[in-house]
Amino acid sequence: MFKKNTAGVDTARVKERLEEHKTKMKLSLKACAHCTLCAESCFLYMARDKDPKYTPSYKFINSIGLLYKTKGNVDKVTLGEIRDNVWERCALCTRCYCPLGIDIPEMIALARSICREQGVYPQYDRE
Amino acid sequence: MVKSKRKPVEEIQNSIADFDKILTVGCGGCASVCLAGGQREVNALNAELGLLFKSEKKTKKLGSYTVERQCNMQFLVELDEKVKDYDCLVSMACGAGVQLMAERYPTLPVFPAVNTVSIGVDREIGMYEEKCRACGECVLAYTGGICPVTRCAKGVFNGPCGGTNRGKCEISQDIPCAWLDIFERLKGQNRLDDIMKLQAPMQWQNQVQRTTVQEPYARRYYK
Image (cartoon, rainbow over all chains, first blue to last red; front, side):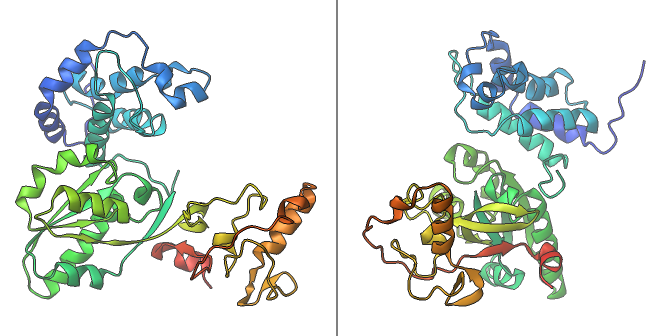
């Protein structure tokens, strides 16, 4: 088995952040029925020929969901993938709608905050 | 987007001189995109302030954090617990963000670390050009998509004025006449009738179009 190279990531701090928000985030992740009703409330999803990677649920499952799934044991590459989901594919316009009342922007914002703390965020003068 | 530029570090230092525990808060929105007040700039400012205070043999607690957007109360909530450990806040957001944060924490002094300059476009990395003054009376429909409020020194709605000279503005030979550009654009679209109708004037001041260049990029763009 390969051991994940978590060099450069303060996994203890990531775990701490995940623990702080555990109750609400886990409930939100569990509550998602994968109904995709949030999709059409996302202007990026609509503007990109309904690319499933722009579905709000895809974005939170593959960011904060992934962080919880891995229990915070993530490497820089994974954080980079999360960055693409929460910054490149999301403007955080807070217009996404969930019929079950999941606060999707809050989940995306937490994923961004954790990435930012680990030094992974958009470099607007390099990209 | 809103373009801003960081204040000189001495000005920021003066405003927080009387406080010992300072939290610098960045903004993940426009201020990040224009390289004035994102996480990276928060770290840089705190490093500079730390050195300055150290040289004066002053011990200060300098914290840093960046929220997604300071102009949205929803994203300020996460600061509620953090601010309890500090005497004052330094905001690296635009004027809107500073004011919203000051509104959320009315007992804490909030100091701005950037000057909000304009609503502009990205010309180059770190170089931004003003395009809109948010006057609330958009006339771009009849001016061919060129804003006379931003571009014309007098902000006239029925131009050009008598100061136009060989395509340049009377205030500077480096500034093109906005109304000549409007005329040429409309002529190309066969829409000159649009500027034949008289428009009610507005009273504006300081109508020089501004370009914001962030300090680290000044040498790249200024000779």
